[in-house]
Length: 230
Image 1 (tube, rainbow, N blue to C red):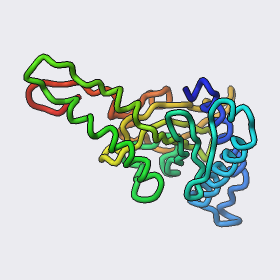
Image 2 (cartoon, helix red, strand yellow):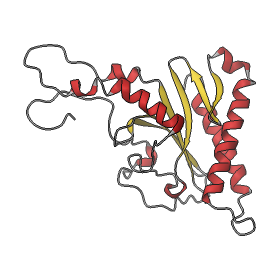
Image 3 (tube, one colour):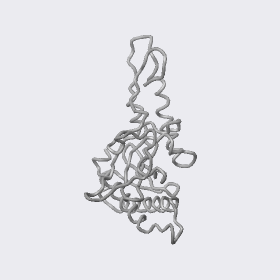
């Protein structure tokens, strides 16, 4: 749905523009900038930019997309879901560890994760239970569709200026996510050099940039005997 209305490409373009502009004015030696100032400036600029662009464009209104401010952050409203932008930690470059690099401790992000958890966790234990009778097992897709809160996670490489993005369903469980899917991964222009100067996290496989989504997966299958549901 996000691809069909053009929102994925829109976010990629806006994030790329903001990241490029802030990289160009990043001055750690002259102005004593650091990774926190770069990330916070970029996040605020992006929130304000997307709010203005969506509110001032009739194409988004006709597509059923609107935007509002929530605790100084921009929220995109679509039929069936709400999207909040989340910047990956600077130390991770474009390879964040989804189970270790994100924390929902307070505010709107915790509220969003709690709403998804309330919808999904109630069904999840049933999906792994072995039935004593021949009854139809619940489908893990249905509670996922009921999760309305989506995070658009984005990351930027300081050296190359390349960005990457993912869409994820946050939860309050230890893994932090019900599921994450890749949205885009910038490739360098021919002849240029891209360097993500960070060691991949444990949940970032060799083909991470090509679109490997981290665990846990969305679909849960019932399993008989001992052990956890897969």
